[in-house]
Image 1 (cartoon, helix red, strand yellow):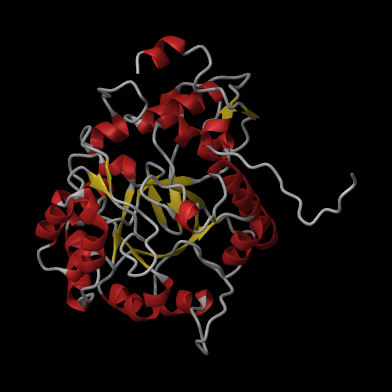
Image 2: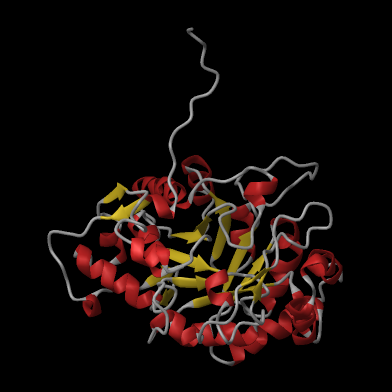
Length: 379
């Protein structure tokens, strides 16, 4: 029976459904250049720690900066609501599973203290580290001037979904070109997953875009709202927007794939799909230096009416340096992420991240299980 078509769907792909094809030319991994730039800031590794309370505090941000990367401090989290955040984080880690969500809702109901924002930023800066901070769009106008006065280096505006055009009851919503003029620092905005939304954000004059909606280990947005696009497709589409914006403006603005990473192979696939950098949450929550004490939870979990996250136990697997650079003590690809990226670039003959963008990828849903019956039977 012939039927009319109401809506056409296209296939999209996540990390487990694709593989990277090695190049015809190979290169020594130690000759690869993986620098990542945001305006005038250059980082020696293209890896960012997410703005989640279980991942980034002052000490973690300082350490991440010393190791060549960047960590983003959540200005709406425990660090800016409590003078004693370590005690609060310990309480969260010790709570039974059935009490975790209401406890987090209670903890995050306390007001943000403006003086703590300045204190946390200045503590990071005093250590000589690059300081990046994150706020939700609703609080950007109030908190951005405080962050600027405290001399933060990079400002991130982040929510589950962020667009350049927002409909609200407010007479004047958050206008990114005006924000860019009002604070003297690079602005990274997220999150988005489509070509058109990414292109519109880039055209506002911002310095970077976060890509990814709902893929994180502690995020339940896809279950609660049904919203999201698998990360490989989202990254490819947003990379196309980045290149379109480059052709029309002459400005190269990086895109940062955010969420859903578990191991080095997925990082490599994200870069092959077009990412300039990646943002990690649960992977870093497993570091000995992370403030979550072996637990991790999403930024949307404390929502008073519609939580879109869950507290998960990730455990502690090694130091931050081990996770980034090794030596690895595990065989699942969750440590020495930088070594994995450089090695993948080497076998593809890609000497830079931009060259890695050009490598061939194939649809390969069995890439992680092909020929692995002995490994699978042992688990």
